[in-house]
Image 1 (cartoon, rainbow, N blue to C red):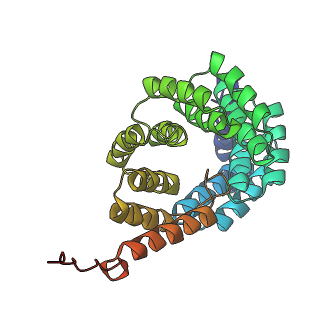
Image 2: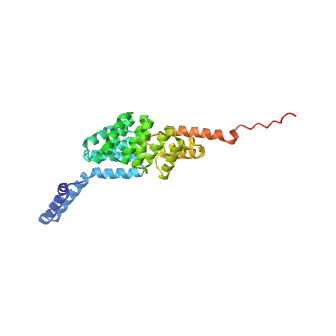
Image 3: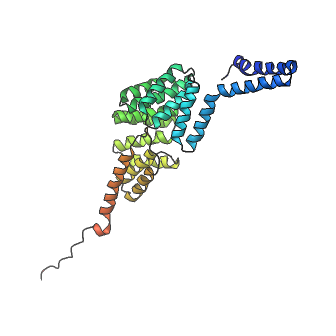
Length: 291
């Protein structure tokens, strides 16, 4: 938020100067000063102009274009921690893990607002996870959660506990996360995954029915729902869900890779093929007992 002093310095004083120039030196001098002021304002606001362009391109699906504009925004205002944090996050999503790590470290050092720092800490934890430093990532968010409880922290930490491999610990945490926000699809997906890994397929199925009501837009939800359906005997619906999963975009921070889902789909298709009537063994004719 701009302070009153900054507002005076950036806008009020220059406008007063233009006003006095207009009345003291004439319209031409006033117009010249106004054009200079307008140019300087646009120049100093380049960072946010680039950031706005990046946001528009992102919503239109031009992710590399958005990345380029965010890079330009950072170059225009290197001290803007918020913009650099967004740049780091998009770098990570698009697979530039090491560059993202370098940028988020700078952003964390320059961030002033606690909320910005917390959001950037989640990004830093995701970078650590992609660098196979899962324990460090989980510890970082566990510490953050003590002072800053948000859905994003619960959702990210829930997956990190799963990735650590202690599924009982992960289940305990993900149940707690559901109590915090039971209407978040990622939190519910984490809980469903915990049940899947503990082979409690009926509970997993129950959770994924809740997830589907939220109409998630990430592929993991449909892939994991397919797993629960297959384990509980609904192969046809499992195939549908896994195919739908593959219609969605996978990111560098997706918790399952496209190749894993494709391999699972092939497995399900083989199971379906084996269950077709033409592939079932013929029944032997009944033999008549000897007289």
